[in-house]
Length: 275
Image 1 (cartoon, one colour):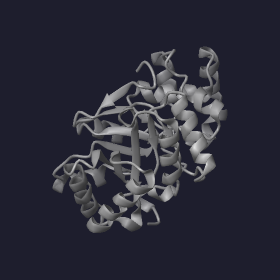
Image 2 (spheres, rainbow, N blue to C red):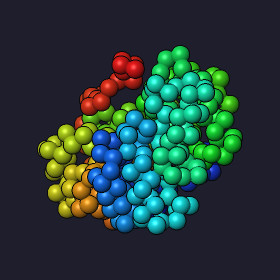
Image 3 (spheres, rainbow, N blue to C red):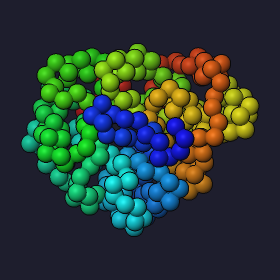
């Protein structure tokens, strides 16, 4: 994990950057175009969007404007709940592909485990994967029991599970399960939507390393082998967030951060989500 090009190897051999930019709640148009361009200019290679974010066109525009060779990039998008099911998921994928202006997607995820539908949706993702329209497929917001259920019928094992994960919700059991199954864990909302930035224990650790609290948390992710995608629309913050490759947290500081866990979410629980 030396720089923004450093990548984990998914179980199908595809390389996925450890660090990327998330664009949840970033406005389509100029805001998302400028933030993605700023990230690409700073050396980011991974951009994470979703159909429901309604900014895939802006992400596609930024990719086009930035002129970074397509094969250097890793683009993720997700199928939304209302599009789950076999045919509708295939159609949703084609729509996302068109909006992004790309020939293929690097990682396509099921956004939430919609009961009674996610297995059919998974079959659609397997088809897209076999047709080489996506380089990797995975899920998002799946608990262990959802993964267990999916794996009973899946031909292809998910390569990634993207979940809410931060020091207040460190997902240790899910991480252990995914590790055994060779499913890469990825964190959304790694900074707990900014809630952790004023945490006293984290501030103390940050001072010790002359880093920001955000940098400490993001470094903690990497040292735990968690792919992380912090969101920002400010260029200086996009650059600062990625400045985490020149230090290493000591074991005692890693443990202190683990000790902050409260199993507390800032987002919805996948078991009680209003689909």
